[in-house]
Image (cartoon, rainbow, N blue to C red; front, side, top):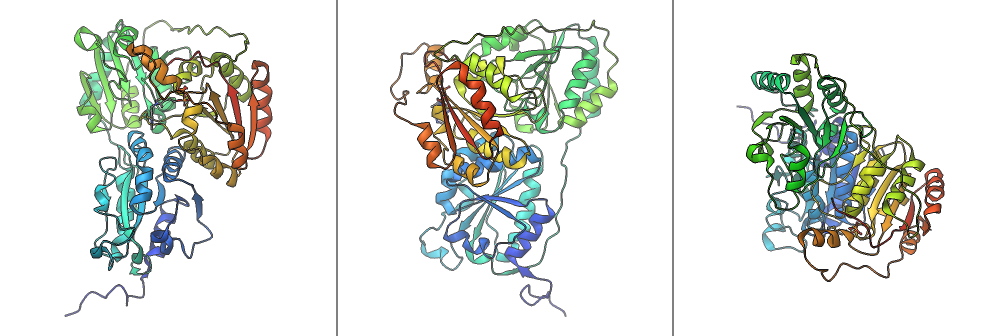
Length: 537
Ligand SMILES: Cc1ncc(C[n+]2csc(CCOP(=O)(O)OP(=O)(O)O)c2C)c(N)n1
């Protein structure tokens, strides 16, 4: 009777670390984000020359960088954190990565297996429970030799739609043990639509006199941008961007672009109530920010939803749902639709140019930014009370041109801009509020070290403007804790080794941005915005 060869004697075994590096290469992952500690040292040494380790100075930044990098590259990203303390720091942006449906393999070091029973320093208690419910799957492999296969499975689960973060806890003595190399599966996990529901939707669209499309972040994330344009032109219908969409899924100067839906139930209902059919593609139906009455659900139009997130499907208020990924659903639909007989529609969004005024008005700042950056810009935004001004005066015209977080959790934008800049070969503009800037400010250091072409524009109103606007929306008085005096962003920039530029006059915005775009490495432009203006919706 033969017995299985033990992994340590089998000639084909490798140290666990080498087997994991080998797997990552096969999966197309050559950039690793992290912040190290003693429980990760065995993973990090010796470090191979062909892999890039991007150091973030706080774990919230490491996770957000990886999230945006995954979105920009279309592949899962790998993050390595330090035991429970490091993962704990990263939980806020892990929540956001989950809401962004970003494929992340989050790993954290664990104490050595022989110490674990004795409550060691830096031991992670019930490690796999800690990141739940914001991971799709979590595992601490039963044996050291299972680590490579656990990471291979983590990759597959992260990439399966709906994509999202997964977690693997790895005892630090596992990395020097032996394991057999694992096979790498690089799947595209698209979900195909049921043909009868596509046919029903096609019939309903053909019969509809006045349909509208609502596109959400998954359209751009799943590379269905061009298909969404084709569908809209075929149907000749207005297209809205979903409430608080975390990507831009339709060119904002297109003749059919009808604007951004607000996350306020009454306002959204008002914008959509005159249509007889609404097709929502790749967004929840609907993600509101405040409570209220959405009349559209009572006697309003038939609402179709295309999503490959079954949980989102179950929790939606659509009348009809097609569970499918974006590309197969839109292709299937386009094949079945008869040519529209509607007259060629021209939506006119009236955007009146604004004149300069001091103190600087957000609308004018956005207009100047748009003039300086051109049509091909990539914007990463976290500027809550300046979003309406941005949506009006800084239009996005291209796929993968806009990123924000789907969660509402601040601290994502700046490190996300670093993640996008690491993935793209062109400058990235990070539009950020002075409050938002401080949650993950150390990401600026990474941008400097990586010599990234990034312009961080701080829209500085010396406070949490959104809290003021939100209070007004709910009819409350000004709360404590919303003013932010005494922060010098120029000193902050210099402290991290970045160039800092102060802009206090409307007439200086354009030139400041032009110079920053030509500079190698990141620039922080601190624009002093009138603190008395700004709006959430
Ligand atoms: C992690 C986290 N903490 C707190 C909040 C609450 N919050 C929402 S908007 C906001 C103010 C942001 O200020 P700033 O970035 O300066 O932008 P402004 O509102 O002035 O446009 C705060 C604190 C949040 N959304 N996320």
